[in-house]
Image 1 (cartoon, helix red, strand yellow):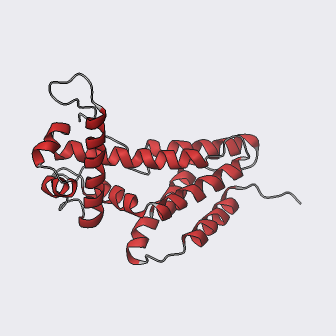
Image 2: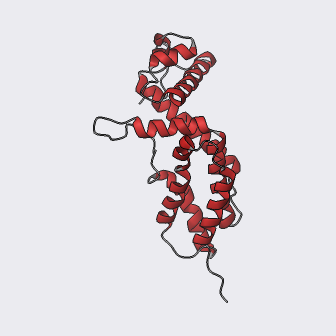
Image 3: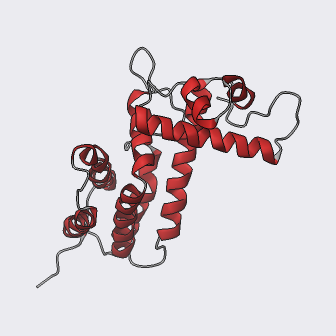
Length: 212
């Protein structure tokens, strides 16, 4: 993947290059969200951007590189959203609550981006069904690390009871990630109530029982 590709004949990108590249990524996001990944062709992206396919090849080597950049771009947006809402330094319970609420809030306010992530994660595969993504798109990989760190801090501080942090982190992550598919059939799902239910559920699942 050449996500840092510099147009031929140049040593650096100009502001115009950067703006055009960002425009193409946004048009690809819109196309994937509306049509699905298979139908989001380069011709479709070019039409939405008001350019020719040749212009796309000026900035991206091929469709695969564009899709990789779309995925990375949406992940960056999500990471920035989460970083603004992180609560380091408070209790582990407060951090876990903030983590759950921020994730559900992102899904609620960025439904298009969530559709795109889901579409790429499920459909951007090779002939054997293996992902072609270079980023971790799985709830079982490195994306679990921040959540596991919260759980481990809670155990070290004595707030949380003993449990396997990876198992609980996977369970929390799975309960969050299933929201996307639910929204496709229940678009008016009350996500504020959903978030509070998750907070309550995992508070009871992680906290130490008070001694009599």
